[in-house]
Length: 153
Image (cartoon, rainbow, N blue to C red; front, side, top):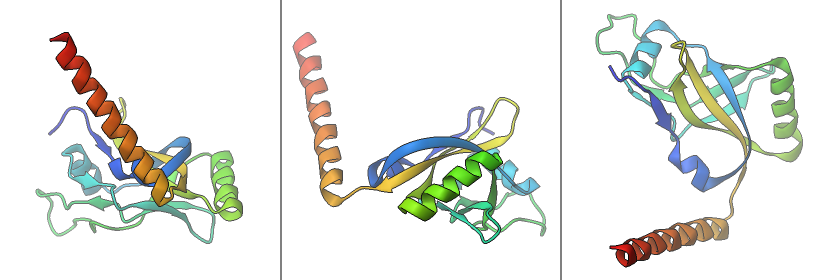
């Protein structure tokens, strides 16, 4: 079992422009939290959505089945409810409805009390030219660091 669990969604920062972040709890079954503690989860293809009762769910989050469980194991890609304050839920719901923004999970982690938390962000999709600009900036920064390193050595 790993000490520090921090599962990241690296594609989210590339695909979306992040506007505001929130930390939410997740409703999990016993075998799900055990799999997360072993680091057997992925949030790269996941997104968040409201149901008809105004509850926020994370969809398409992959939590592998727990290896030591019996036939009472969980489904790997089930919808999982997120826990936020009513004020935060209303704000997110309003933003998604009116401006057409998306809610994207950024990181899945276990806090100091041993509870699984997920950091979500209110995001706006990037255009293709914005993605190209991000790649160009990253390459320029890498080249600059390489030049600095060779100059100092």
